[in-house]
Length: 146
Length: 146
DNA sequence: TTGACCTCGTTGCAAATGCAACAAATACTG
DNA sequence: CAGTATTTGTTGCATTTGCAACGAGGTCAA
Image 1 (cartoon, rainbow over the protein chains, first blue to last red):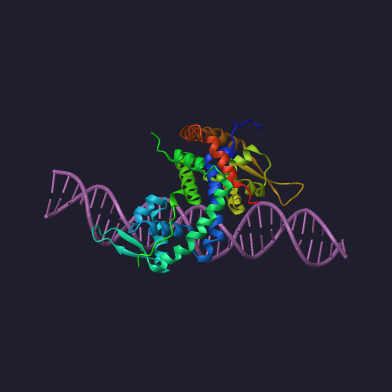
Image 2 (cartoon, chains in turn purple, yellow, blue, green):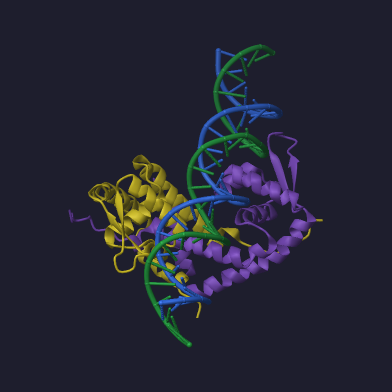
């Protein structure tokens, strides 16, 4: 056997690298902070989106955040159960659900946002002055193929 | 109600951005290519690692790739079932498993690597000349806090 | 050598996930 | 209009996941 393999550098393979790093960052945030509030990452994302754009539907969030609609649906249901958001049928298009934060949801965000900002601040510090370059590169990566 | 929320920019929030992008890239690769070979992402990672460093153990891969050891174990078992790799008890330390590609595994990598390279090439093209900057920033992000 | 402790890989189990199927609502088409 | 097709959110179900527990092997000190 001992056939030669084509050369390949896994360490600089982008899908791999980004996945590892993203998982690490999300886990760092979730396990240290969000877990204290019994909030999952999916719930956190839904919460933030609903907080900053009122009346979003499940589908809107699916598209914005890249979460499966079933995941959004279940996260929204949990948040509703916990009293953080309210579902309301859209009167114009009754298939749509308008999601809105309750007062408790707003209150919760007031607690979570500083934690998130703090985490981000730590990351930016590590990045030194390269944050802009990082975002620029990520923008490029997300461009649709022409 | 209508309480004001602290300002927060989800779009530039790094754990979020990286997660979305990483998921998109991995899905792009997996759904278009790996799926054809009935290979999951975890299996693909194990395969590549075993291919390029012979005699790795499950624990080695766990550390290198950031996969749960149970995930590595199950991926390795599947690859073994499919005939792509062989498990062999280390004679020096009989707790360890040495993982090695079979000929079929080498053959499979010969098919997969060009596909992966091609995918990466597309990403690099999008990145234009910013690939180095991206990697440099990711390196910074991964630095251990001092 | 014995006994306490650590490490490796696997597995049981509960929870999370993704996908397809579904009902309800709306849009389109002739 | 009627009838068909599409969209939206939920749910059933099979698969995947992460964690803890386990057996087997190894280490170390007394």
